[in-house]
Image (cartoon, rainbow, N blue to C red; front, side, top):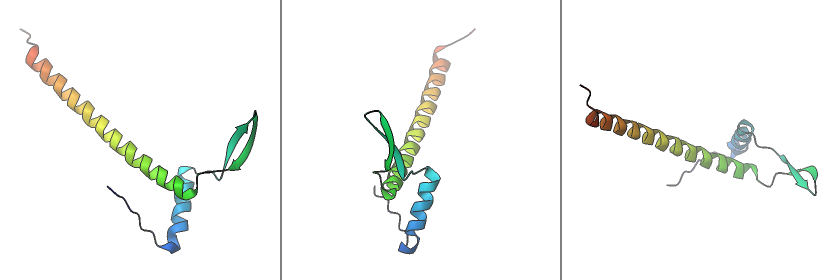
Length: 89
């Protein structure tokens, strides 16, 4: 599957920057070398950040759906098994 988001060039920076602001992109990040922490430019570009966050969203959505489906199936199977195997008189 391939997902393409087509944003007109005139809006691309606005969309990218809004997405980055909403999801917490940081222009500078902390880096510790020899026990000294400094702020450095983020090696992940805004465009890379947006792509990663979209991939994570899709992945998390599928994982949540599949976990929910597995739980529902297991519950139904346990109920069916209990109903068929347990007879109280």
